[in-house]
Image (cartoon, rainbow, N blue to C red; front, side, top):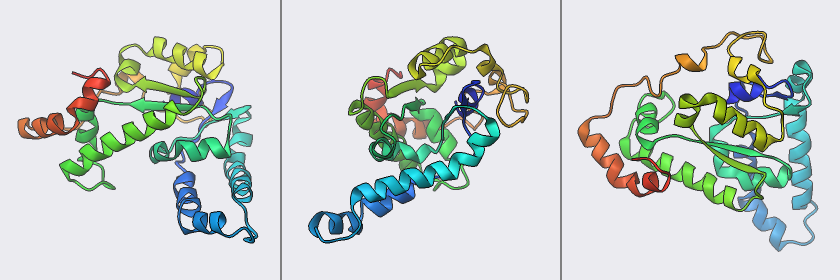
Length: 228
């Protein structure tokens, strides 16, 4: 999704996952917010923090935008799904694309990520909490700010998915987005694997017992999302 968006001639999306709003959330939602709410004499107001965050993030991503010479930018940090409300406070006109993937495949992937605990329960709860957080926050945003996209739909019908994506963003559909893997099609001149070379999941299949645990723990949310 990051690569597809970056291949649009009007939008750049760097490879870098900044994690900016994870750290900002720790700052403004912790002890500091209690001080801001209780002490009217405190010199630093929440609006000051939000303004500082906006300016800081724009300075952070600015060099990438300048290098790409495109009018719009995007950023991809998966854990930002927990902070959509804060991002919308900093950037009120922001649009959010929430990529949702089958729980079985997410759990399979997380079992092989070097940064993740290799614990089945942790992986299941991570999927449930991230999907739920994004959907709940998206429900509080305006209709033109939040879009859910199924990973499987993107692989099965990339052109239709990209057309829907462009319509949501208010940008013209561009066939070049599906050619993001060509160095001349993306912002950074980097060769990448085409969409057709990306399988649904390259990791080993879950055992029957692990599948049963996933189904037992996450089945209701999976059914709500239309997954069998």
